[in-house]
Amino acid sequence: MKGSKTQTVFFCKNCGYESSKWMGQCPACHEWNTFTEEPVVKTGSKTVGSGKREHGNAKPVYIHEIDACEKDRLSTGFDELDRVLGGGIVEGSMVLVGGEPGIGKSTLLLQLSGNLAASGRKVIYISGEESLRQIKLRADRIRKIEGELTFLSETDVDTIVKVLEERKPDVAIIDSIQTMYTEEAGTAPGSITQVRESASRLMVEAKTADIAVFLVGHVTKEGTVAGPRVLEHMVDTVLYFEGSGDMGYRIIRSVKNRFGSTNEIGVFEMGEEGLREVVNPSELMLEGRPEDACGAAVACLMEGTRPILMEVQALVTESSFGMPRRQASGIDYNRVNLLLAVLEKRGGFMMSRCDAYVNITGGMRVTEPATDLAVVMAIISSFKNRAIPSDTIIFGEVGLSGEVRAVSHGDMRVREAVKLGFKRVMLPMANMSKLGKTEGIELIPVRSVSEAASKL
Ligand code: TYD
Ligand code: MG
Image 1: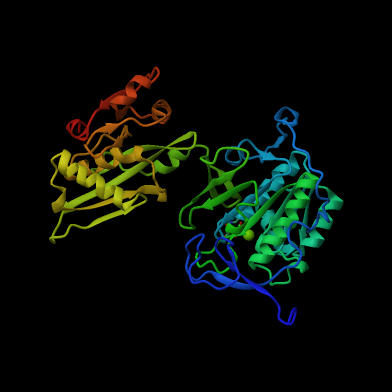
Image 2: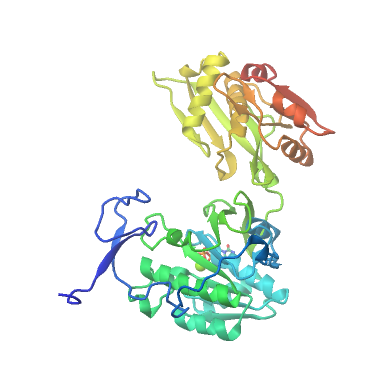
């Protein structure tokens, strides 16, 4: 009989995949045990907020008919954040800021609101997590708030939309989307249906009223709260906050951006007065580096358009068991094994009898092959017990034949080394022809791993 039973659907908590029956593994994101049951929502996101649409009168246009003047971008007051956003906040865009609880999302957005208000913009900060008093306590730590910045403690999306319609701010902050609810969805806050429905209501409002909206989304390791993953395809830009509490700094990375590159990162430091920009991350990464230590090499990797120097450490000791131990932190374990095999076969180093530990200092994670040569040199340095001069940086990709291959942006890496007072650069021979004029630095081009080893 129709209507005798409430209809339900199953959602994957991780990616939002929808299914009529429960499944153990999500066919979309392959996560296990992520399905939850939720009642069916009658009002789909298409009708919410925008009312009934008339059908059959859409008209396609030619590309030259489209008004494409780049909308004005608002500066966040942080160069680091502006760069990650692709040059500032785009009017009417929706940005999702994800990250673990306690990493500093609310702090950053409060600071951003303060900066925007100080530059004459109208901002509204809506919190569903904290009372106004708690917000004030945080605000007092950070800076004097002046200008058109107002606060609201609210979780009802319909009320929030009404407030936005009345006040028409330039920027609105929603902290966090998991606490928001709309009655129409009919489920508990934090459920997939609620998160999706609330976000789509705010989205309609953002687009029609040209309000830039920042949504905060918590990600938990257990995935107990509806992850912001389900929102990723809805919003224009997705930023992720990385870095754990024990590291002093935080990295903001864009994983999706309709208005800019997704390779950029912004580096911040959490201090007594909120987040501070780290203008020169290389300096931070290399802080406290021991002079002329065996097994240490400085690598240069590119994060988007920016070179960052960091230290690679290796410890190679004779293995006391038949099976050598290998460990890698901050770098792919298999890549380290591969490089050790190359050293064994092409460089003539008896690595199979040695334990090897490789570590990237500062808690960074590197994936770029351009760090290969620095890893190899750090291993050789520890193996031979001979230090690499501490004024040297090393970059280059290592191939399976032991060849050192060219990497991109050689000139930018060299320039970063010059800027930080390094005196020598070991780089792939193939990069030499593309290098512009370099002054004040000695270049050591190498073709192979064994040639590089002989320079030590
Ligand atoms: P918060 O922004 O509330 O994190 P999130 O919104 O991502 O959950 O704050 C994160 C941490 O930062 C919190 O443990 C306190 C700390 N903190 C400082 O160290 N200095 C400061 O000035 C502020 C405001 C917070
Ligand atoms: Mg918060």
